[in-house]
Image (cartoon, rainbow, N blue to C red; front, side, top):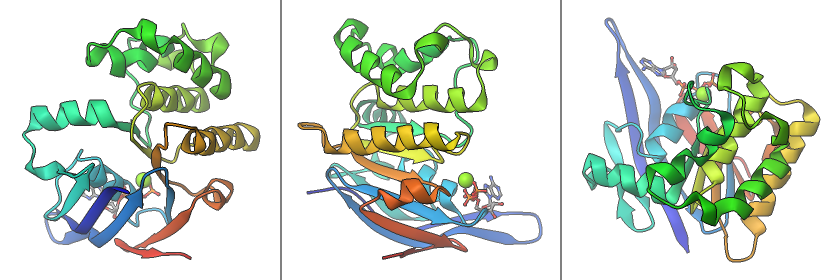
Length: 227
Ligand SMILES: Nc1ncnc2c1ncn2[C@@H]1O[C@H](COP(=O)(O)OP(=O)(O)OP(=O)(O)O)[C@@H](O)[C@H]1O
Ligand SMILES: [Mg+2]
């Protein structure tokens, strides 16, 4: 079953003297439970593409369909609720709320959607255990290392059992061991019974990409399958 697809996405940035085509007719789709990695050199358009896929930014043209719904046809508040329910997003720069503790940040998708956090205790334990965050839960983001912030961002993106995870460099600030732990978590979630979460990661990490079902390469805004 196809959970996600995008068709001919184009995103251009108009600068004073020229236009940058950050994403040039990108199309791909993701099946339920599939793990897709997008690689490519710096500036090739990976983050821009991921933001379009999650409906965080509007393309100049093209479509994104998630669970049968066309994202850019939704009203902003509807899209916001839809995202909160079905998507998990890890930003390249984490974007944790600076005045909330690690734990409060992780629980944010639940409180924002008015869900009872008591129902997610097992999930919370599972994520903080796998991500090694036990002793950092009551710290503010500024008191955490880049790698710890990244793991908090990942826990926040996964706490509500999203159907699809969009993660931009989720192992970018981690040492090999922590990166492998994150990679194992992502593949475990994908395989977990009854979950079958789809995952799209943007990564430079060859070890993480090696676990993907399919790898795409982004080059000058163009997306092509790697294998
Ligand atoms: N808001 C913006 N205004 C103008 N140009 C932008 C903007 N955002 C991105 N770009 C340009 O779009 C291109 C793609 O940027 P993007 O951030 O998507 O690259 P990336 O592949 O994620 O790079 P990295 O691996 O360094 O994170 C780059 O040339 C970048 O300079
Ligand atoms: Mg990027």
